[in-house]
Amino acid sequence: MKFYNCMLLLSLVLCVSAQNWFTDAGAFIRDAYRGAEDMWRAYSDMREANYKNADKYFHARGNYDAAQRGPGGKWIAEVISDARERWQGGNSGRGAEDTRQDQEANAWGRSGGDPNRYRPEGLPTKY
Image (cartoon, rainbow, N blue to C red):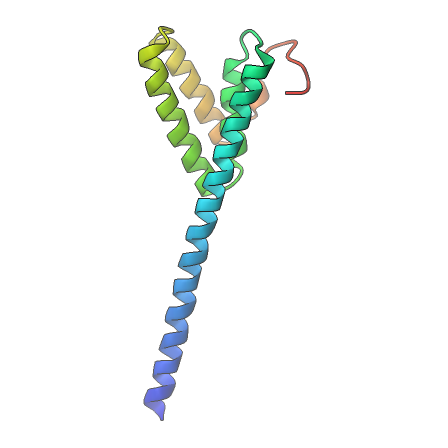
């Protein structure tokens, strides 16, 4: 009888542990998906605003919004930002300094810094 009670207890512990892992993995994926949506929204807003010198603000805002989702959002913000800068660095002709400044704004937003640090004067409040 003691053997069966021990096996039941062990099974419950393993089941609960597995469920927490499964739940955590699901939350990470959900946060990453929603973080990607935040990044897309910031990009779309940047294109819509078409406002001079607002690029760094939208970088910081997209990363900030995504990182607020949790570990998955922070992870996807970094992946998207790094991929974008690698692609842009070779194709845009803006140079290494612009890429460095973009990455600085990305890191600022991901770390929880206020994106308004990069907000240009006169950008409509809609953004």
